Amino acid sequence: MRADVPADVSTAEGLDRRGPAPRAGLVPALTVFAHPWPQRVGERLLLEALTEGREVALSRNAPDFVRVGEAFGGPLADPFLSRKPLRFIPGPEGGLRLDPGDGTRVTVAGEPLSAPRDFLAHQVSEGIVLELGGRVGLLLHLAEPGRGGALDALGMVGASLGLQRVRERITQVADLGVPVLIRGETGSGKELIARAVHAQGPRRERPFVSVNLAAIPKELAAAELFGARKGAFTGAVRDQKGFFLAADGGTLFLDEVGEAPPEVQVMLLRVLETGEVYPVGSHGPVKVDVRLLAATDARLEAQIEEGRFKAPLLHRLAGYVIHVPPLRERREDIGLLFHHFAREELTALGEVRRLTPGDAHAEPWLPVGLASKLVRHGWPGNIRQLRNVTRRLVIDNRGRPGLRLDAELERELSAPEEETSSPSTAPAPAPEVKRRKASDISEAEVVAALRECGWDLNPAADRLGVARASLYDLIQRHPNIRTAGRLSEKEIADCHQACQGDLEAMSRRLEVSRKALARRVKELGLGGADR
Image (tube, rainbow, N blue to C red; front, side, top):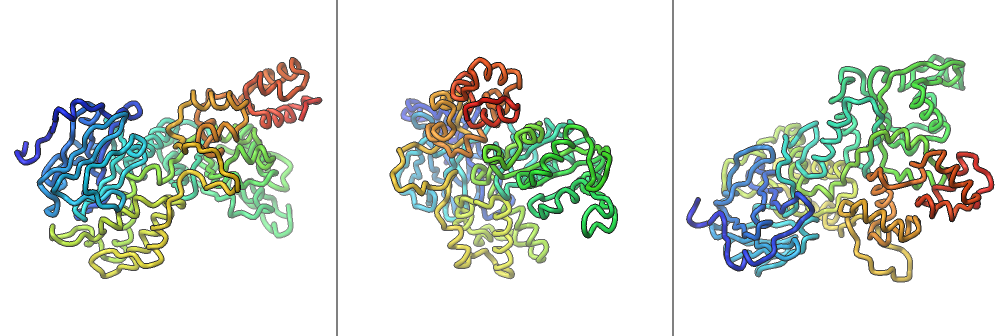
């Protein structure tokens, strides 16, 4: 232990404080997102002492940061950081205090920190961006001790809790034949996950065919997917194989599955049920052996309510569901992803030497202020947008010793961050409801809110403090929550008879949405329902 920085600064004040009480199994952590030596990006320090009521001191020389999945690491070791420590002090109800001391210059979210500052538990959970000495960037966030693995496992870069859970779900389902529905925002990496499922499964040596349904003209979708016989339509001058037959024995990935035309939805459902396709113009079925993966950023449940997507198809596609977290919920991965993309671009330009500086006192190639902007940005386009921004930065700064923003990118990255939902356009002020992250809401809370609101999703979402779309996702994540789509035909028919077709009474009795139940009643041909 170095004499100038004790590894454990346990003062009487610190021992009297209540340690943070994050969600079960999670502890505060610091992850490096910027460092003059880029190979340090992604290293992490777990602040487990805080959960035991003890302080943690951080300086140039201690403690050690370790790459996730490895046993040994080292201190931050930048010569511009002070040997005098800044201190992380346990606070009440899961919060903490950051005392910068009189050593290293510290900024928080771009603002200088000159005195001790308290942070609430939810702020730590959302991630706090710290800059040290104008050269090192750290994200204070929550992590789960014991979770490890390579930072690029399964072809996906990062070590965030959300990404680790995605990897685990891929491993759980890869060797099975069930359809998988991958749900996530645009640009969040859904096709990469589909390729990982294929690569980890028994069909890895067989074809992987990727199809974006949004890019296929609706009038050609059936022929493109299922094939067509010569003369089946104008322009069909020869037999067309179709994507299903092209993927025979392997995997077919349908991206933007919510864009499938109604007639194609019917045909997809038939394939999932029978394993047979009917080429356009053919009089008989063709047997196919295909593992079907699908992805969407659409709210399919809302499309079902509007009659634009078929509920039985959703139930078939969602044999297993993988939810992809947006980039704003895995901020500790942003530094790693930026350097991963930057290395690819620099290699193509013959300037990869930028990532291996030779002088510890030189200005960092990625200034910490710019890195901080990247981590704090909302990234509505997710990983795809980050990759594009990285490419622009590298190309704009060809031949220069460091990265600088042009005016256009400066405006883009300085735009106010949009959180999980857009502001209401209603002129009347909405009730003040604290907005929450969907990942913080338990199954019991969802059920209680739905029950209190008579299974009406709009007021239930307001009560929980989330967007209605987020409530849809929460319901899908918890298979024990009752929905009309999960009820058996017999249960609905028995209730319909007992309630004499009164949908309001049926909804209360079955504890499901009235609108969704009305749709199921119609699908089952139960007449006399009160619509």
